[in-house]
Image 1 (cartoon, rainbow over the protein chains, first blue to last red):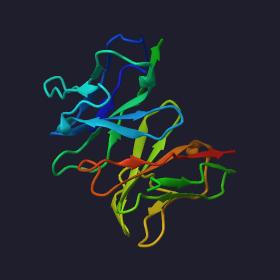
Image 2 (image 1 turned 90 degrees about the vertical axis):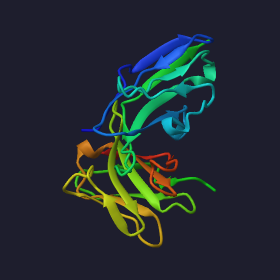
Image 3 (image 1 turned 45 degrees about the vertical axis):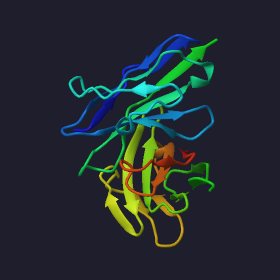
Image 4 (image 1 turned 60 degrees about the horizontal axis):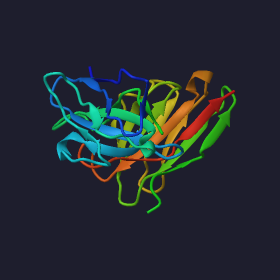
Length: 111
Length: 115
């Protein structure tokens, strides 16, 4: 079964501190992993995807197939990073197009 | 490009009534997805459509729920004989190809309240 687990419902850090949002997944195959973000009063939007291997707004995420994890990291958090973050997967090559989401982590960056 | 447009933003229905939720995808997008979000939960996949075709409806409840994406006009998610448990936020997303290939863009959602 496809499942995405985000163990932290809430995460609070101070500005300038490192931040890591955890994501673990369950999938029998090679999924594609994504991080979506929803800022206050805005729509859900793609932050990054593992196949692009890029850093967006200072965030990076590495797919660890051994640990089935795709944690989102940023070395120095900013106040504008405060938002809801959702980890998601889809079925990879030949697999389903649908996105399976975790329950989300609300990140608050305090001044 | 106005992005994915959903209407209405808020919908109140009495138990037993029908709810119709509309989604206009971004220009040039022929793939549409519907998701439901219950309070304190993540987004749950409901259905994936391409123009005039249902590709994957594995997340749709077996009864009372239906979806369409006609050749012309918006995609419609229809809930017949609504019950209190249908109260949720319903999100639509669209993409130019499948969501694992190209970015899926989300609408702002329709918040359905059943009283």
